[in-house]
Length: 135
Image (tube, rainbow, N blue to C red; front, side, top):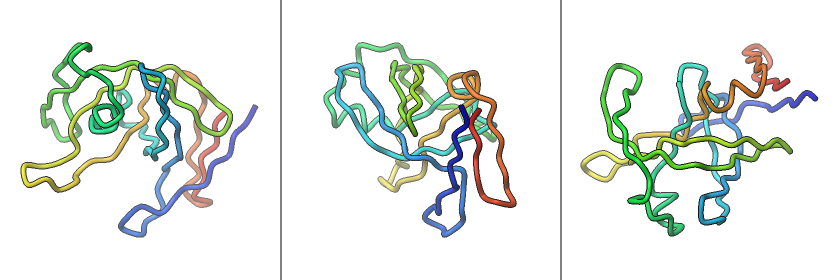
C-alpha cells in the first residue's frame, strides 16, 4: 500500500510536509488538526490545549522532561492517542505541551515523529514534487 500526500502551505506561504490528521483521544473524542511530518523529531508532539478543551484530564497522565531542537527543555504530558490519516491508523504516545509563549502568542506546531509514525512506514520526502510517499 502506498499513500501519496502533497505538501501543504503553512502560514508563511511555504509548502511543507504537513498532513491532515484526526486524533482519537483517550476519552474517545475526535479532533481534526494538521501536523508536520518531522524526521528530526523523536516523538509526536501536540498542543496540550487540544486535550484540555476536549475534556481530557491531563493530570491522569505522566509528565516528562523533553528536549526540543536547539536544546530547549520543556515539560510535556505523555498521552496515548490514535492518529488517523488517509485511511491509515496508528497508535502513538503523544508528548503534549503548550504551544504559546508567555504573552499567549502561538509558537509551535503539531509534529509527527520517528518513534510513532516512521516505525510504521517507509516515508519518502520528494522535495522537487513537494510530495510525501508513505509505504
